[in-house]
Image (cartoon, rainbow, N blue to C red; front, top):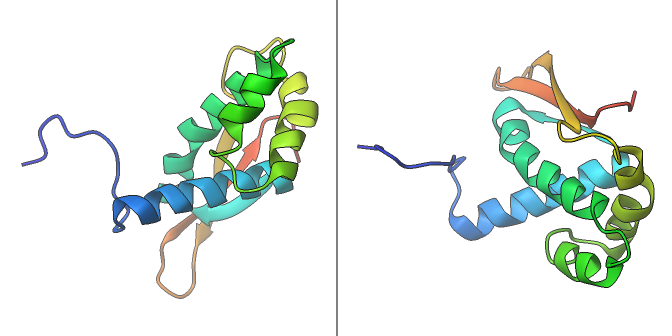
Length: 122
């Protein structure tokens, strides 16, 4: 029984899920929009939302925010881009920085694909 068990496993063990979440979040920050399966998009969305909120509320305490974000993303350039470019655009927004739009089904296994992107991006 799965009573009171939160979260998705995505058919992976813990380390693989963490790695998947980090790489999807990094790709989303670097590219602005990615196409992945609907389950993965729903899985990475709260993670990215928390990162943007933390970067948005950095203010003068950038060093601690950088130290918080570096292990959560895979590259230093994505940390810089999140703090300097993405977070300031959502300064007056209280949440909901990303949107998930269904794109269609993948031809190989017929799984639902979705585009996750930042609000305001094309």
